[in-house]
Image (cartoon, rainbow, N blue to C red; front, side):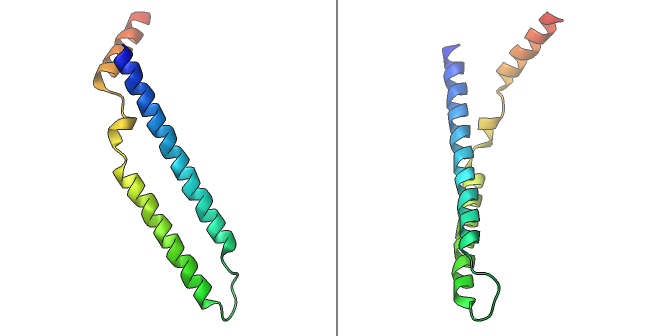
Amino acid sequence: MKASRRGASLAVGVAGGLISLLLLASWSLSLTRERAPSHGGGHAEPWRETNAWLEHERFLLRTLMDNVPEHLFQRPQAVRAQQSAHLRMLG
């Protein structure tokens, strides 16, 4: 029982950390957009820098999402079986 609690606690901690990273990335993107220059003539260089920064942040976010183990968010088979047996017992 302690091992399953520890595993669940670890999964919740990892999920919380990932959500925090995603929120940070979202905040960073919005901050970058606020700093971006408005449309106008002669501002090509700041646009290039902003686009390069956004591309880099998209890459970091995609890398994070691609490398998060999916099994952290799936309930183990034993837990599902235990919960369904408990529900059957309750009626």
